[in-house]
Image (cartoon, rainbow, N blue to C red):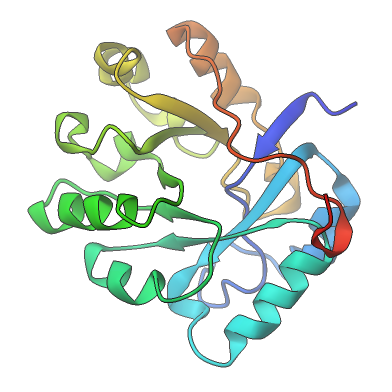
Length: 199
């Protein structure tokens, strides 16, 4: 049995312009690792527009993963919601347009995960309470997470993520340590899928 129940923040070679993603980080490879019971692929939306989307969707679904994307700005939200994603990973910087983007994504009724909000400088007081706040392995250790998150542990639901761009990032050890320090329990957003998208 996997010790990680859910990981919805995983990048693959579909994020073609992200220099942190290595060629080995294919969806096939992620599937072979089986590091979490519930997995979602959330490559960067700017690389998934147009004809490539159907290839991406088929590849993700064929491996029994949930279909997500990571949205970089409020300006991208209007186009992103036109695609049939299961959930959104969203960068919410401390700008009025970014908070409006979060509100717009929430209005779709699909889960909206605010990714590494401390690193993005998000003011959690301005983030819609319907959003899920992410604690991920890539960034949580880079700042004073106790001071940043403590006032909000009773206000939001939280998810944990790897934000994996490379094979050895497929874990949540540091994220889970921080969550334990904060007394945060994880929200599980979806049931487990099997390959080809059957439950």
